[in-house]
Image (tube, rainbow, N blue to C red; front, side, top):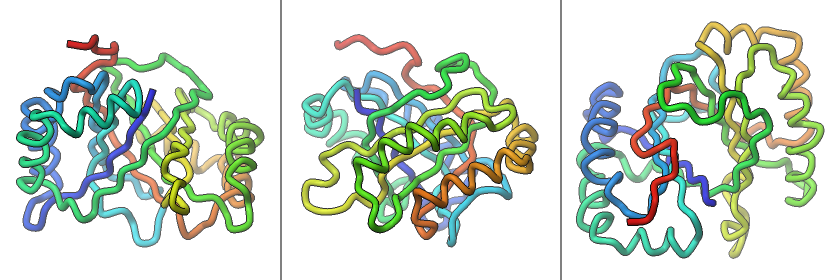
Length: 236
């Protein structure tokens, strides 16, 4: 299963609220959700959080999370009329496509929590990560799911935790922009802030510094909006 992350930014002149409203209520339901190969689809709309990481901060105001069963299904989705004559043509109406970041991953659920819940009111932080220079990809993947994941798991109030490794195909002709995407789930912004103010987060920062190039750590805090799912959609 491919767990794809698409970070999107508003087109010039469009406010963050207008962008998010159009994406959730128009583009997602009228175009993207109709692509038959997509078996799950949700949109994370950005909310303010002073602890978001990255210099400069990400210009994006939302993330599409898309699940596809295989690379073959993903390729087929890009050749459908629903994509070519629908979702793709609509993109310039709301998104600054030149800012778009796409990361295809293999997800690893470290803390399951309540799992994927359609009406969950939690907040989530999604973090883009790139390993430090000199570390092999194999070593990074092993440690990110080992000692690093164990350290993150100690954050107080953490409800669910995913660490998603970038798919091998992104390295065919060189380095991928990011090696993984991780997601922290909390009940609310106050719980997230309390975790980041805790001694446990100091341990997370130390563990992260042992693995990650600090120039390539970017995060976004958001709320979920399910469009397709969370139950897997059956093939049409």
